[in-house]
Picture 1 (cartoon, protein in one colour):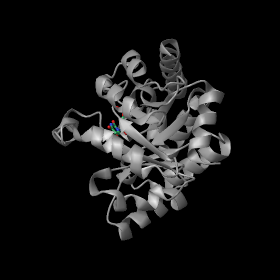
Picture 2: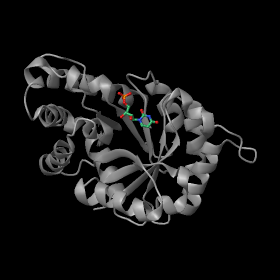
Picture 3: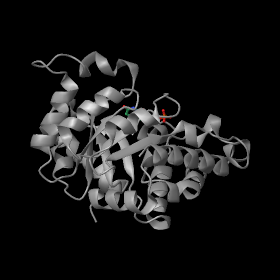
Length: 270
Ligand SMILES: O=c1ccn([C@@H]2O[C@H](COP(=O)(O)O)[C@@H](O)[C@H]2O)c(=O)[nH]1
């Protein structure tokens, strides 16, 4: 099944637009896990198992694993999600993109090594830099459009023939890069009005929306501006607000409660 099919099924099955981001930071792990040699896997797998029925996707962030030399834990974690929670799509947040010969290796890393269903991509180098991802009709290509961070406007808001660059990016991807129907865009929850402008350009294309929780994005505003005509279309991602909701032995239950609260807030605004 393709990423887009499994995403649509996950939206319907879970009734949820929430995505839990998996950004391990061992200094914030509960004390009883911190010294374990497999702490990164054990922590993330416990979060996954506690929240899988509440989400439409998981989003591991690759730098959080690579910086810890924990790529093996990432491989094991994604395999665990596929085995224990089949049908929940895994979005590898890697923000890849490079000249074609290198991009092919990034695609192989994401889809063969890590077995991700979708990957985040940086479109700044142009179409050929993400072609090895676009041509994988079974996989999702989720391209940065209007990122959640304060400096996102430095380039993304620059005037580009009478419209901001991020809208040109959205338009180009929707019109020219999405021949296989496997593209989605990243638009931060911190920019709800821009989210609405992107939605107006791209129809029902899914939008990955990080920035609620720790970055302060407003769920109601995200829904007001970002839902598609079917009342779907959003993958609303939270990492730290869920992962570190508790720091005791009951951390997974605390994470579940935080995810449940977010899921309810999203459901109430749909
Ligand atoms: O525009 C973007 C693109 C990606 N991210 C990533 O999402 C999570 C956000 O973490 P929180 O703890 O929920 O703030 C993180 O992995 C970022 O790398 C983003 O924040 N904004």
